[in-house]
Image 1 (cartoon, helix red, strand yellow):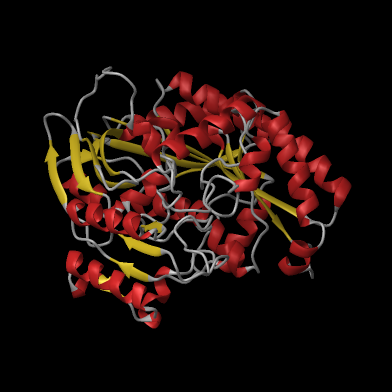
Image 2 (cartoon, rainbow, N blue to C red; image 1 turned 135 degrees about the vertical axis):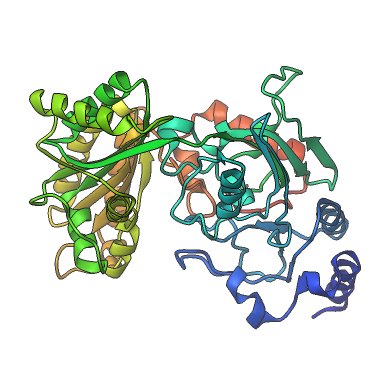
Amino acid sequence: MKREGREFLNILKAIVGSAGIVEDEAMQSRYLEDELRQFHGRALAVVRPANTGEVAAIVKACVASGIPMVPHGGNTGYCGGATPDASGRQLLISLERMNRIHAVDPLGFTLTADAGCLLASVQAAAAAAGLLFPLSLGSEGSCQLGGNLSTNAGGLAVLRYGNIRDLVLGLEVVLPSGEVWDGMRALRKDNAGYDLKHLFIGAEGTLGIITRVVLKLFPQPGGRATALVAVPDVAAAARLLARARLQTGDAVTSFEYIPRLALALVLEHIEGARLPLDQAYDHQVLVELSAADQGVETVLEQLLEQALQAGEIIDAAMASSGEQRDGLWRLRESVPEAQRRAGGSYKHDVSVPTAKVADFMLAAERAIAAIDPTVRICAYGHLGDGNLHFNLQPSPGGSLARLNSGQGPEISRALHDLVDSFGGSVCAEHGVGQLKPQLLASYTNPAGLSLMRGIKQLLDPAGLMNPGKVLVQD
């Protein structure tokens, strides 16, 4: 290492101590590869601050030396947003030591926590107070609040509670200058100028490092009712969703679409997965209601009976125990793992307005068949909020590598053009990272893109905060 680099590391050690810095390349390795192993980087060092003051001091030191910074959470993202480049010049800043839950307020229904807290720890702290933090993700045992905030995480309960953006009251952020912006107000109403916290939620660490947050909590539901429901087609699923929202007083927490192929992959590759219906159908939805009392099961039964009479469903299996509920959710949550075990999938994370999902699916099937009729579509996910993980499985006997180097890119262009024509988003849930900046630039209107670049230039004129992520570099 050059003398300048050694001197900079000594500055970092003076800020965080020896326990707060990782220099050894072997020990750094777990920080330098993304969840899907698409991106691999090198870092000048991995620094692990213990509090906001240390983060601010690190950022100031980086600015003084012109060192680029990569904020890092639980490393569960799908777009390489927390992975450094291959230069070995970027400093990776892990918030894993900043994992304190500062307060739970049962009167104000709020929770204050460091950005390095695991999502599961936040859920548990809320539950211990008899309350609910509703953000629910498959990675909740390892993802951190800072990453959830930086990607505006959604997950399985968006229909009822919203993305994490909707669950935030206040933030603390270390700006690219090293200055600390204290927006930690636990207020439901505050119209004192621009709502600055929303600049940083979803910005993937390109505008600053989120260090603390005030979150909204909710009452724990007294009752849940869950069913796996077979429907004739996607249009019928959309009608069922509308019926469920109207008839239950908007008690629908989750409404997840599972096609035949996704279900088949789970049953084949996931040990212990069981189908509760007499047979697999082309289209299934996992419906969950939650309410203050146990009567919600009767509500779901009545809903399904009426939907059956209306021709909106073909068959249904309701969970009658916590174990059965877990079994139903396992079918949905195991789809990504089943796809991996089957050899991987060509992924797209898109959204369109819920009322247009059925028409979009039909149009997408036609467009893809015109390019490569052997590709199998495995589009599943959050039908309740219009977000589909529109993944492609190689044809039987084919390979993901062949799809990647063959028709995959052409299919992606056609699919993304179609999403755009339906008024949708090509970056629905997983963010942009270093995977999709060009995609974002292609499908964002010029005025919006100019605003984003202007905000980035204003807050981070040196371009040191998570460079190469979200926006295409000039």
